[in-house]
Length: 483
Image (cartoon, rainbow, N blue to C red):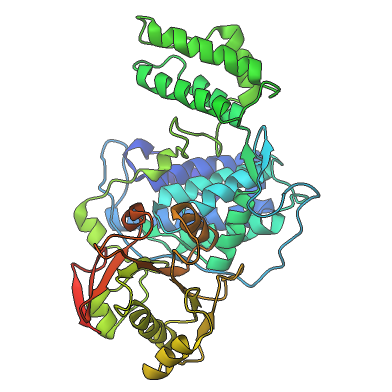
């Protein structure tokens, strides 16, 4: 049995470069936990749990593969499991520090995002994605290091969320195989996303970081041109003003980039004095705040390459749809989106009310937003005619500000609700884990009354007409159903 008393003696012959990445990262974690006579291990229960779990995984690996020698590289043993990050006993959400967070969806612009918010942001981004043991362990290790170094203290406004997140990560690591799909409880995820959106780096800081990231690298001309464009648009749109604290440094960076693009030299070299000054502003640790030149989060951990046979061994959470609707659209994943469209009087609302009743009977609470018909006779007649009444099916004539109690939301129709693609995406972002069914009208020529680009964003598209529904999407090659 591997423990803190015999660990280093047992592993002294191991060449960690030949070991699975998760075990190699675990070894680095143990090296840190063993400092000062294992003081972190003895004083922090969470570190103890992770280290003990690692000891168990290492022992299993040795048992299944035999003694590990530095001159022999052993194959990794593949294990797969579906791991849902389950919700521990409900905890009270603490109030953030005064002025630490503005109203929802109104982020505070900061020069550097707080460490606790950085970790919560990174954890929330894992939801619904397949992660390896090494990636989970890497986040746990970084989080615990930040706690031990007092970068995250007990006085953090998000201390309870950090503790809950840490418990969930450790639970996932203990139970998972070599990779698993991470699922965060919807209510917890919503809170994490609120915190993630509470702070945002100043745009001038973000652009300066992008500038610094190009320093000393070859073949950066195209990226430099894209960064010049971003800087120009930021000024032209008024997002960065002359009175911005870093306007002068940003202007110097802009001129430097233009000179680099026009020069024959293929490598950008930032003057040492200028670089030192910039590093003092943006920091040389861009963890959690690093942005790519297209403005999206740049996380090397997001890239996972697996053999197709291993992908077949993974499990993903679906809603378990059965019956005629499974034949129509397949078995969609939790939080799916669908678009239903057709000419007026083609039966779109009737189909969707029947689908809503089916979901309410078998899968959870459903909200049907009858924005177009409202609480009128025609809606009542449809519900009576198809016997759509059910305790889990709720009707409203508008989209409520809080739809968190429901697992499925129908919006009839998108045009009547005055929604565009941006509004739809914002609604989905604010309500992770909820499935949405959007109902559209078409013109006589069969075209959408709205933005056709939304069709590329949904998982399922259902066309209604001539007494039948036809579906295409990610969960089924194409189904049909008589209306």
